[in-house]
Length: 121
Image 1 (cartoon, helix red, strand yellow):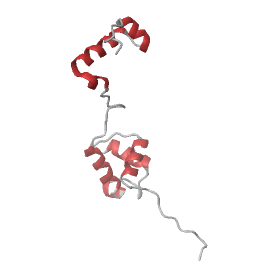
Image 2 (cartoon, one colour):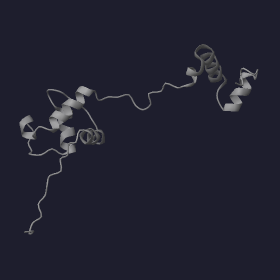
Image 3 (tube, rainbow, N blue to C red):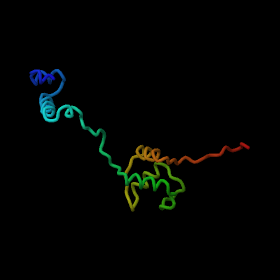
Image 4 (cartoon, helix red, strand yellow):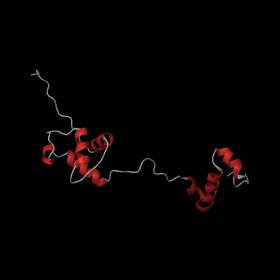
């Protein structure tokens, strides 16, 4: 609006606390695409490193008993599963424990064992 009313780019830049080149870019984009130019198309966040195939592999592995895949223990923990995935000879998936926890939670997988109350009859 400021540009359409004849306000110089330098004044607009001061008004919106932006660089003059940025103001010019926005004005040119607006002139080409209209209001659509004002809607940023940012994806946001870090690019995804774990593919859908990786997630499927993680879920399959988590649902498999550790001894079946050659791991020397009877139950998975998040730490043990992350280490196993990072060193798996068939398919290596490097993933942080927090992201692994999120994937497991999203797929309703829990490694908590049921405990019985001793002495309760």
